[in-house]
Picture (cartoon, rainbow, N blue to C red):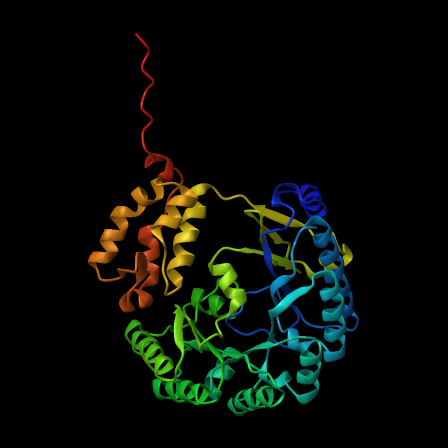
Length: 414
């Protein structure tokens, strides 16, 4: 979609609706002290005045979106991601959050999350976050092995990772999540497992253990294209993934999504909005928002975003019914609760059940999916081989139409 049409969509509700279905808000803070070797997100360095100008542009976009969605209720979730939100000076970020919540109020009991690097979480930052209403911290520790952290180009040590968890708890944050990476090149299995046990013993509320993926535009992506990147073997990855499942469950964590584990009542509510395809607005460069069944993405230039506050260039994602149905299958199966065939049929028509019947039987025969309480979900083996399941269930353009029930011809009356 062209820039002019994009700006018109931003200014008015149009086919995005008036916002009654909006439940969350994502805010992208793109600044980083260094770029991790696995990262291909929209990021950039801080410069004098750049952060202030960017936050002002975020508020301008927020006001424009508020005007476009006058019926949006108080939000259930707010998530500040990046980049590195914790790199912003705490007083500056607190002031931004106060102004943002005047534009988009939060509902009582809402989840307000902030991504942070361990080295940033000193007492000043934590006190400012708590005062500004942040009640959930997502700490990007990634590894407890010093060599792996160096390979990832992270800026903290293993001890700083543990210390950040302790300081967060001491500051009153009861909902602390930790990110770890599985499959870091060269990391020894015993070191990964020791780090996993270490963090599980720290009293955190939530754990995300993501498989290291090789993104094309990342440092690792460039190394892989040059033949200089050695990925983890499938056998090693399998051992570590299943060990993660077992140890997290043994420590009282529910494995509610392929890569995510939570103590009771501590699931990541903002991420659940995405997995359940709810409407979530988004502010900032490269941010992706959805409302009224429409999805859009802001352009990725920080400079252009700041120069045009409240009027970012954005592209609309016009997907057909087959792509939407495929996304519903993939996101639903990521959750341990699985997918509800009746709900799929109500949304996409019974043709979706006809389209996936044969693929479901193929992956069921391989032991990758099962039926439980009327839903279809991944098995333990399927969690590890979810990509294979998703490939089988991918719907191509026209698949739903080809499986639609034929229309009986109308017979002429005698």
